[in-house]
Image (tube, rainbow over all chains, first blue to last red):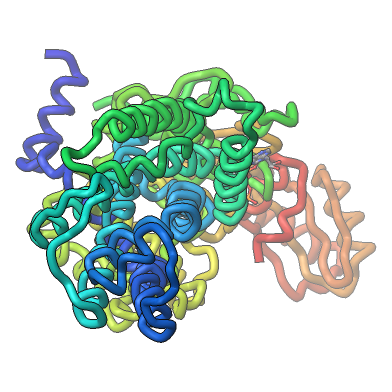
Length: 287
Length: 310
Ligand SMILES: Nc1ncnc2c1ncn2[C@@H]1O[C@H](COP(=O)(O)OP(=O)(O)OP(=O)(O)O)[C@@H](O)[C@H]1O
Ligand SMILES: [Mg+2]
């Protein structure tokens, strides 16, 4: 037996449970993200979106004649969920994801806690994985907050009933709720590409605010590129090009083609930027 | 057992081209309390960062507890307690919550005993009463204590402490030194960087002296001190006569100040000097050999003052 094996065995003998508590860091990470007042305020703002829309429509009455989901809310409170999710997608949700992802590694670096985590040792790859998992859970929590708030406000303020789909057919309320739930899931998955970008940018700096600003800047630039018709050749590759595809879940049967392509694109962005973040964090000097 | 900390040719050149650590060969014997001395900017923290795998050496090797770093860091670091460059915590969390988080990051740490271990560690550093207070409301000294508590969450084979008494009041400093001696008594090897020579005198068995990135010396504290020759000091109003007499007897490096004459007595026994001074009618108010302090050793080695030592 070599000396290094001997010492390794000794360590195992001292700690019989060595190597078995990989999950603890992930749980601790969730505590860190969701325990912060900043996160809770953010989720509170998202929860207020359905309330604001609901009250506005209640006050102005149903005679707005608006198209789309908003116009249907007065007739069926379920559409408050869908409209709130749809209206939060272009701005509120990306902002929330930007703040949390920009903070993730840069925040630890600026506090100096990154070095304590690494000497614990958390392991750089595992720490990054824990950060990403917490981000994904946050994306889900954000859309679920809107879903639940929309459900409660919609059911209190408006009549509910069978749901008229985009394709003209009608499904039961339960089926409609399930589709709204599916929309929340699809939207939270749509945010993962941006979360990956934020995580990567956060791995580059020790200033959380700079990471947030750069992530949001990237998001805005992608939005502008998507809005320039002359660039249609690259549009299919842009992060937010198919973000609106979630509405296809309100067809009968659901139209999956665009949704799947959106999710594949998100997966691609996530893979690229997660790998880049990994390359960065595993080689970075932590000072 | 091999030395808990070994470095060979350890070098770090930062992007600016500055060499912060220059071909350092350390060997920290098992069971020692190893004082890592050096003035500001001499490369102590940079060396410690490389020991712990936080930054990559430009060249050279590190072996911690017999295993190569940073390659084996997941295996080695659970057995190492570390405090690097000042206390860093989540200010919006309590001291206890901070301890729990860092412990959770170590996959070898048992979650079942986590709370109890945190309680013990807080107790050891005297923070039990502030356990549930937010770290934002901690004083610098309390944070420093909490940082030490992080290193004490588990039984460690090696402690690597970067200026552990920085920011502590005299009471806290005494407590930490006591703690270090106690841990060393249990067989933990302690590697501690410091500005404070008194700290090395009081707790360290070994010392290394860094200056401008280079390792000038490493040896036992006793050896370091014995290299300096004792000095003869005479307190007298008759400075001129005393100096003349001593010079006549071969005392070198004579220095005269307001009330004293001092110098290197060479090999002669000191009673000879006393007799000669009396014979020369020099009034003697005080007379003796002074053991050189580590500070003198330090200045002799680095050729620098040590103004931060206060
Ligand atoms: N990230 C960095 N980039 C560039 N230079 C650095 C970096 N960190 C440290 N240095 C330089 O390396 C040298 C050694 O710094 P180090 O922090 O190791 O000194 P130290 O001995 O710990 O000093 P102190 O007693 O003040 O803590 C200094 O000149 C410092 O300016
Ligand atoms: Mg330092």
